[in-house]
Length: 216
Image (cartoon, rainbow, N blue to C red):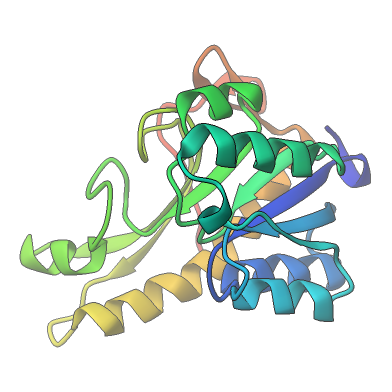
């Protein structure tokens, strides 16, 4: 996968602000990646409207019409096959993918998680960071494996936890960093500088012992 030859499908469930960050990065020439489709499990997802405004194919595989993971994932894979993406970018896709689905796209699924993994896997990460008294919080871009939020880390961005922070305030600052780091990290994968190999992330031919640190 190199340059414009690399295509990505973006999976969304909600507002799609990270999707918009990708659209803006591609349009602004900061990301050499082809967005081939946007797919949602929610017909009311605002991310689908963002895709249509940007002139991108917008598809929906409604979760309500596919009971259970196998039927839904089979339908999702069939829809994605129409576009033959090199990468799948999870951007607020609120569905846990099975190991079988992940195996179909091994090393080609990216996600962003609102914590400094491996701290605070799962939900409610901002409040958990406050409750733990952490001085730093942030977000992590990682390859997706069947282990929830446990795939090899690619990059992290940190924000300080301020004395008067609430979970919504902290979440807003982390989201701002997500919009910056996610296209940047995906660009490294699209260019081939970051790869998935032997269950690990590699950068410029060397295994990543620690995630790359994104700084403004």
